[in-house]
Image (cartoon, rainbow, N blue to C red; front, side, top):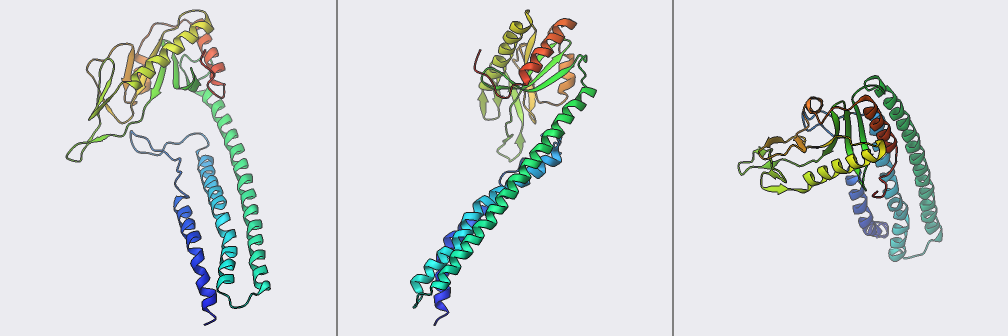
Length: 299
C-alpha cells in the first residue's frame, strides 16, 4: 500500500506537534494586568492601552520565536521519515521538502522583524505617554505644592517603593503583598497583628518587612541629611493591601497600614514641621535621586 509510505512518516511529527501545543498553551502565561486588592477593579496607569498592546506584541514575539523552529523543521523531519519508508528515492521530492523549509524560515524571519518593529513603535509611544503624563501630574502636584510623591527611588542597593514629602515630614512607603490565609472552614482570614518587631499573620509571622522598612527610613534620613545639610524627619510606612491591621504592640517609629485612606493617614501624621527651605531642598535632592536608572552601590 503506497499510501502508507506517506502516512507512517507522520509519526515523527508527533514530538514537534506536542511541543507546539505547549507553546500555544503558554502564550498567554504572562499577563501584566493587575487588579486593585481593595475593590478588584483593574488598575490603570498612564499609557495603559499601549501597555496592553505591548503585552500582546511580546506574546506574539514569543509565539513566532518559539513556533518558528518547530514549523520550519516539520518538512525536514517528515522528509527524513519518508526516506526511511519510501521504496524509491525521489530527489525532486526531497528538494521540495528543503525548499518548503527554506520558505518557512523566510516567513518567520519576516514575522520576527515585524514583531520587533511593532514593539519599538509601541515602546516609543509608551515613553511619550509617560512623559506627557508626568508633565500633567504637575497640575495636581506643582513644584510649590507642599505634598510631593516619588516612586521607585534608588536606595541603598535597592529601590524605595514610594517616598512622600509632606509639610509634616517625609515618609518612606514600602508595600508587601501577602495572599490571605484560609481558615479550616474555608473562609479567608486577612487579620494581621502588628507587634514591636514582627507581624503575626494567621499561621505564620514575619520580621523582615518591618526591618526592611525601618532600614529604608534610616537610610533615607541619613542620605537626606548629607544632601541638605541638616536633619530631616523621616518615618517608615509599611503597607499591606487587603489585610485588616490590628495594632497590639506597634511602636511609633513605624506605621503599618493596609493602604486604604493612606493619603489621609499621612497628611494627619506629623513628624515635625518642615520649613519651606528644607522642604524644597529635600524635593530637589529626591528629584535628582529618582532620575537615576538603577540603584547605585551602597554609600
